Image (cartoon, rainbow, N blue to C red; front, side):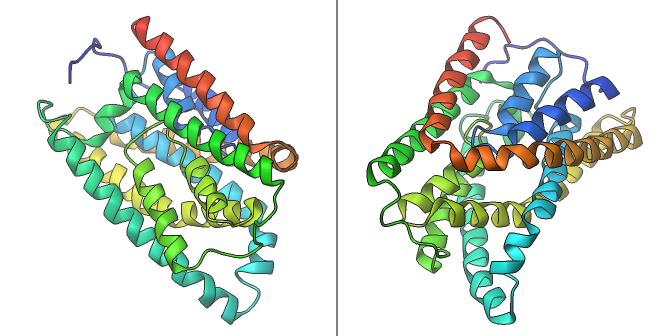
Length: 299
């Protein structure tokens, strides 16, 4: 992979944190890849999205909005997944299966990319892709096409045949595999892909959405641990790195993203349910074109 970028200044400021957290909070609920929007904003600010401080910040922003999602969806989950022990046991199996399949597929794909596409990059890690818009654009394109096809199919059927149920173990495995395919790529929306997979399997959008966000809550903690580990590795190679400052700013970002996420969820959720799924696919296709243009302009 060619290095088309000059070294950039990765020193984050409170201004950067507030802007990026606001973008994350506004985009998290929508199936348009909030991480891709954050990465593009980082590029435009002159930051390197592939550096450990910035990838940790991205994960912490996701953590903040995931806490917002937990608060917002708590009543729904309590009425479905947590209403009694039997309901909790019934959903635990599918979540475990989906998460295990995600880990297997995601890790295999990450290792494959690191050994092939990134084979000439020193200390190659999958996060090195995050600063390359030529990978984000096609990921947005693929995610957009998946959402568009799913939305048009659902529109033709007018919701007919969609079941108000949770996925069984086989379906959970398929949704988990789809989630695993999203892990290496910024732009391939995790929520968009998993919700679309559920809908294609005949599960209602509402239940697919609830299951998708439940998976995200389980997935976030190990991803945070991975980014902390990457940061410690970088600290060993660059002793001058202000470790405490990076952690502090990332926590600040998490808090701001939590507040922004709650504010956005108050009106975005109702709008999303009344909207049409395929429109988000169209948005992703347009976004892919914009990102491709930015790449040609040297970002």
